[in-house]
Length: 143
Length: 153
Image (cartoon, rainbow over all chains, first blue to last red; front, top):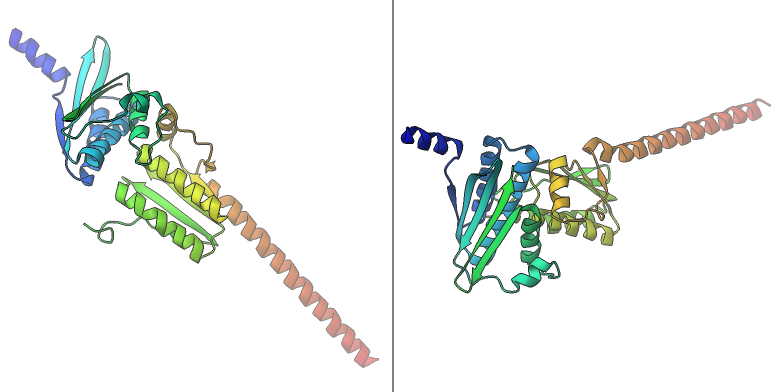
């Protein structure tokens, strides 16, 4: 019985997927895969667009500022709500001025602030852990 | 892979204007490569305006949106008009949620709507030319007829 319950739970919540980001083509690959996954989970075209956009922003940040890292796409259920958590992790030198960036008062020529702020506005939950040894960002998108 | 080996975004000349159809997944490199190419063509062809059709674009993130804004601003500085056609409801909604103001964009729902004033202007100018030619021919005929009459007299 426990086995059946475990199988049912694993069937209702697909496994997380990890996509390595090491080249610009990986940014395109990550956003396309995020969109496909969201659609396959039954997300609307609007929610799938949000998922793809957030993934694109995060993947570009990894490639542009850390060189390499990975994106994880984690479907999960929170009560009756379906969420897709997009996690970005890298071992870069961290994000300076994070507070200023997220306050919306940061203007960068590189576009880092613009992308992070966009993710924060699209996500239901947005969490950034950054040190001089690396950064992990998580964004929950409901669908 | 170099930009030449990749699929370059096409720039089409159309009745004194340039049409830039964006399709599918636009890589950062292809998008950044587009800026100098299209500005160069605007200058060389003295283009009256540029239509950027995004109806084939499935996703627009902050990078592509900022690049379009930069292009539109550059066209304005060069004296060429710019229209962005075919933004999907999903893209518009997402851009607005991200906090991007699209005020600087002149937009149309479809490519046809963007082309309509150009086609209308061409039709009107063709009609004027035809009317002018007709008038000239009529005047010539009258002169010729007058001449004949004068000769006859």
